[in-house]
Amino acid sequence: LFHGENEGHKNQIIEEIILKNSKFKTIKYDESEILENYEEFLESLLNKSFFEEEKKIIIYRTTDKLVDLVEELIEKKIHDTTIIFVSEILQKKSKIRSLFEKEKGLICVPFYLDNNKTLSIIANNFFKLKKIRVSQAIINLLIDRSMGERKNLLIELNKIENFSKDKKTISYEEIFHLVKIAENYSASELVDNCLSKKINKTATILNENNYSHEDCILILRTLLHKCKRLLKIKKILLKNDDVEFAISEYKPPIFWKEKDTIKNQNICWSLNSIKNLIDEIYELEILIKKNTSGSLNILSDFILNKAN
Image 1 (cartoon, helix red, strand yellow):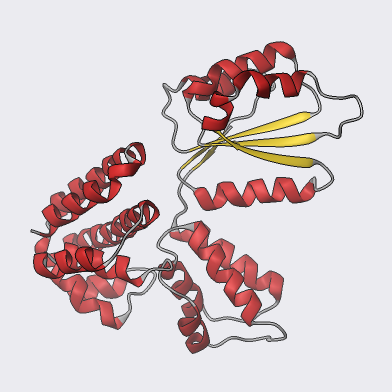
Image 2 (cartoon, rainbow, N blue to C red):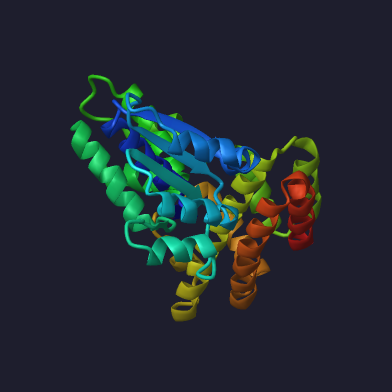
């Protein structure tokens, strides 16, 4: 059972498992497909042909609805088949998580969000492996542009790998023009205007962009990233009441174009209000994931309320 927020890490491990066992057949399902064809799925595992090759099954969007399936598979002692159940965050009271944690022979792996330190290690290891010399400024740029998401960082590193064929060094300017902010500049602009309490500009961006459900998650993660950055700056200000100093102390370094925006956001939000906003963002993400069809309306109302 792979569960948690870190989609990039989960996908990375799953791909490594599949690649290392490429001779085995890999079949992917969504939980809804299993539930709709429960008996057929179970029968296909129980009645496997003697000559059929070993296989791996990956079931995405797993919830407690599949706990009966897991218990039945344990009882039937299915062999020669590895099943990976992939889920978002599962609370401790989750039945399927509890089963995987307690039952012998089952493996439960949580995937927590990366921090700047782990992302920096990933980036540095990549450049060492590729034998490409880069400055710390480039590493900082990549970490900042990844918005705290391993998935985004891996996308950017893949671009760099394709760009750097036969190159031993890469300049900061080359990297700067190559990478993007989480593949969507409007998300960053929307969040900046929201945190700056610019209600009219925020409303305009919302109206002019045709956001999808996936965009809603991106916007939330971008909002969370910038709120955490603002919170760290607020904490530095408690020790030294100089906003210029606080911004300069933040790591990775903040680009000069963003400094005025952050100064304005610092005025708009108190330490406690930004802490409360971070808590609300976590709750909102759960709500949006449970209400896919209404996610854009839920997010828009939240963004406009905070920008007002």
